[in-house]
Image (cartoon, rainbow, N blue to C red; front, side, top):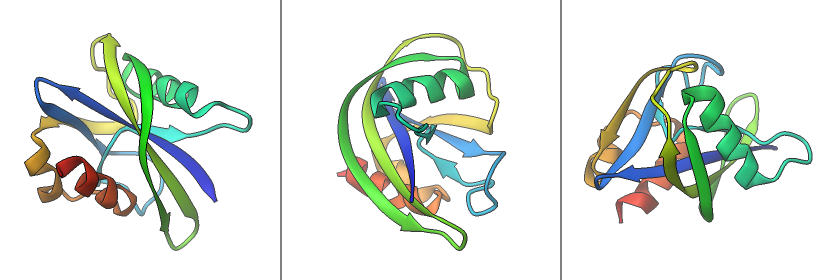
Length: 126
């Protein structure tokens, strides 16, 4: 099982999502909460802060764990763990995504989300 962290970043009552342009074919072109894999021995909060800096060149602070979803793909199983995060600084530079959007919570489920992100989006939409 692969442990993956995702960031819930809210600004002006809108949620950050991004469209994947690299990586696994199961999520290519799909929208997701940004994040990435937790490295061996790495703290999850540190992992999400590192991943957001690597993928978007943004500084964030991970505040607290919210929810997770274990999702099986054809070649792997992912434990996707959503963290409430706070934007600190930086301007977006896309490295693993083709675009990003700030969307309202009630719009989230209308996007073509990566399978593991759907349950997290349902939670956020409540």
